[in-house]
Amino acid sequence: MVIDMKSRRTPLEVDVEKYEEGKGLEDGFELWADVVTKGWIVTDNLIKIKRDNGSIVCPYIVHRRGRTFISEGDYIIMEPDGTKHVCGEDKINIRFEKCE
Image 1 (cartoon, rainbow, N blue to C red):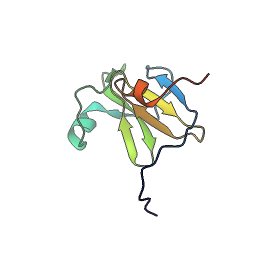
Image 2 (image 1 turned 90 degrees about the horizontal axis):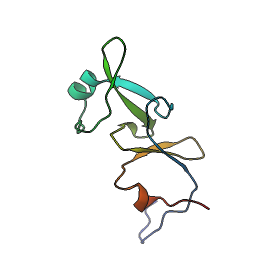
Image 3 (image 1 turned 90 degrees about the vertical axis):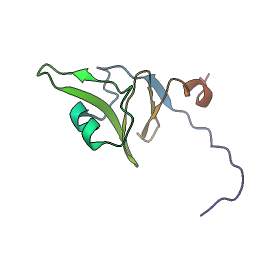
Image 4 (image 1 turned 120 degrees about the vertical axis):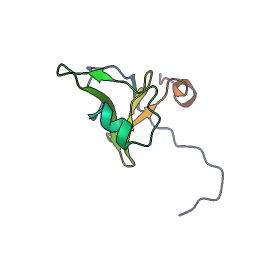
């Protein structure tokens, strides 16, 4: 169904948390070498974590469109149904406001 009108997104309370390693906010990790060689994304600001074995990995979340890799300063948005999104630090205060 195509809606042919201006629309406003329905309000939805979500949990918003700035990404930090060790909080378990990511769904997985991809080897940095694979991200660079297999991906079609800009890799300049992606978070890179060095493992004890020397490998470098990048955290990501999974959603219906696939994977989104997490960049420096990103926030993870978690909807009540478990859906996750990534939102950049430059957009978080424009798109989300604190609930009272």
